[in-house]
Length: 330
Ligand code: FDA
Image (tube, rainbow, N blue to C red; front, side, top):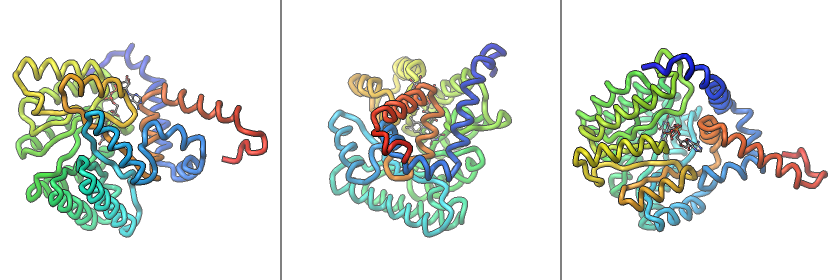
């Protein structure tokens, strides 16, 4: 699969921008600066439901009232100690309890590096097991997000191990990875629910398709396989052309609307979310909340140059309106 030289040239600036933001997403010093800045925190609110659980619960209730399903992400990743990982897992248990108490959708999404994957695999597995068990007791579902390609094998191994005793756990496949067709085959065979996305990290061409046209073509192929052979697949994309392909394929092959769902991120393409829900499709919104929003926010900026302009305009507007005495303090 290849987009050809013209596509590659046109994509070069977008790719450089994306790489820069993904690079920035790993910088702890930048994270500290950004999370202290009042201006950045304002622009983040478009993509993040709040910093506290009560704020997130309000957003969830609003989404449910408008006919959406949800999955909650307690923001955080790449922890560096077992204590931090255990505390992150405890926050998920609190969320599951709060969702159950309020009768809200009990679906959560988590990252293994937040559960301690890079510190101690056994502790990570134990943390996720605690969450999956609590979720099972609450009739809830746990989605293990997919991070960069260095963690794909470990993520799939942990999910498969947990799924053997707990069917309420699923994972994510990224269409930009060259390996994904083989992974989908294994997950479909084991009846593990897959969320299909394009992929949000900056990956080398040795493992991922560099051209967007190839990532999209791979998405369409994997979506078709999942719809035909998967276990309640979740098609996570805001791409209207791909959504159209999925709807047509499902209609043509008699795959009912109850056999799959669409997923989109909080604050992105709300018009499309509402249109699909209005047409009778299940739409699940991924709702992140918490104080550790920086890497998540950087990946959202990386996906779309217009978001960077949106942020820059907010910063400039704020700079113009701020009294001179306070300017430059953030
Ligand atoms: P694409 O990037 O082609 O965008 C299509 C259109 O969507 C754009 O033209 C624009 O209108 C809109 N759009 C997309 N991104 C936008 C943004 N940031 N701001 C504003 N508009 C935007 N990735 C990963 O690696 N691991 C994971 O576990 C997950 N999990 C996940 C869950 C859910 C529910 C979603 C929707 C996405 C993910 N992702 C993810 C992110 C995913 O890999 C991908 O980076 C984004 O969804 C953007 O890709 P699209 O499919 O939307 O297409």
